[in-house]
Image 1 (cartoon, protein in one colour):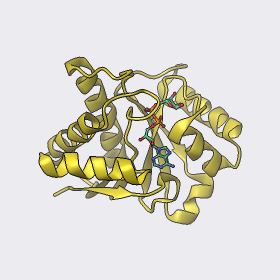
Image 2: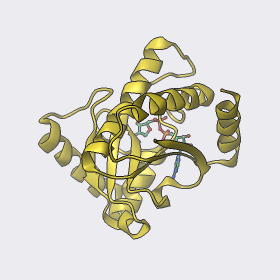
Image 3: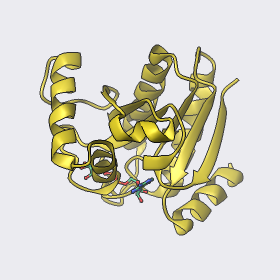
Image 4: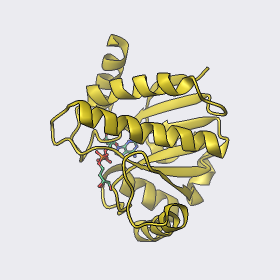
Length: 183
Ligand code: AR6
């Protein structure tokens, strides 16, 4: 059984073995949670961007990733919180618009990270609200898509037992809880 919980917090210090980054295709961690993770992990975001791009070349043999593809980087300074890996995944850009295509892309992004966590043999994984920030997807839809995707994944999960969705602001946390309980 896989549990799914919505919590409030800062993902850069959340004690899960894997934390997920809401990245862009080029792993240029310039803003949002990506910048926060990069800075907290390496001390300097530019250094973590270099490490991420190198990992992308090694793991995928290319310079950009598609929805569903993921890249793993070491936790570095985040290890002090019990974090072992960072998995980078890319959600859809919405700009306020939501449709089936975006839902599918977000599903792929979430599922890609969950499967990679299983491959790494970890028990816990924490996600930020992928695409609900700079990419402008409606938070309620993002929460719903998380719930659906984790349910689907739980049928095939091997090592992963606990999945967390970490909301940064109190407002987002409340809205996410509401959307989740409503389902
Ligand atoms: N802990 C948890 N959640 C956070 C944190 C944190 N420390 N900081 C922000 N969030 P975003 P996106 C929340 O914009 O929409 C970047 O530049 C935030 O409040 O980070 O997928 C990438 O490089 C929001 O709810 O990701 C891409 O170019 C959620 O994390 C682009 O932004 C996601 O917001 C990706 O945009």
